[in-house]
Image (cartoon, rainbow, N blue to C red; front, side, top):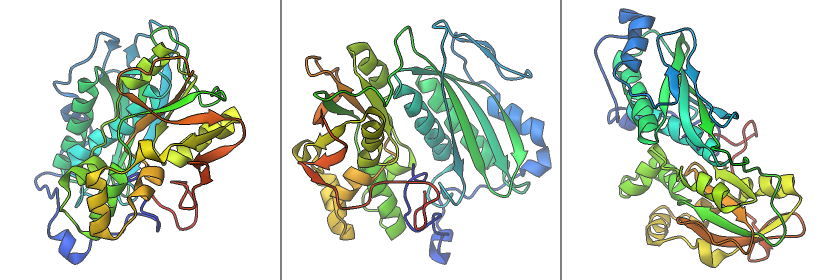
Length: 346
């Protein structure tokens, strides 16, 4: 995942002197140390709406949420300042919305709908309260837009801003979608767009602001949350969130299911906007399509006889064998994001 993305030379580079003077967010006012932990928490949860599934919300030692299905889908993820985001690139509210997107997409990928989020925030004492207000607002607004609530969390001192989010999801009686149950003969389909977040990161790294739609896609991904439950209801065999890159994430399905996947380049061709950005940066947009994660699209394997739900499109087939190919050929470029690999970074 890249501002969890893939700045491939380690952590995201620090802002240059020129960039530092043109920040997206440069809040002033009282700091966290000035007003204290509990007032900051109260500001974060004030006036937030809760869905009916929240029985006990913020303000108690623990939240209580319903799980009518009897099962809970759960996932957690983190964003670390300087590693996954930079405040001269992304406003605090955008960081908050991104944290919801990357977590909500994970439970959508198993066929669940997000119902509740728990948020842990870490920051230095000198952090302006406005930064945490913005992050909390972004998280709360994004959660409410998909019918979920922020039901609790914590605030601690840290050396940089850290956002840790855990999401709970409801399966609504359906079996979870796994990576390990794809079958030879399945149709591989995609819901959502890919390549845009990676292109946006490349543009930010190059200091190019001529493609605001792509930069926005990196700052705030827009996962197709409803597509996961729709795939499960339609009888999909397997599904994954595209967070680390299409080839890498489909590779996880191949490994877990002991199958091969062949992608159709004609179904994945970069659109005009990606081609124009590639020309501007002297970059190959195919790399963004195949290895650029963090758009948080969903890819699933459907039985051939199943009609694809709305929002899904065919991009390949599942075969006997192993690994991912494109038009029958192995991809020679980067495989996608991996944590703790020399020369790689979010």
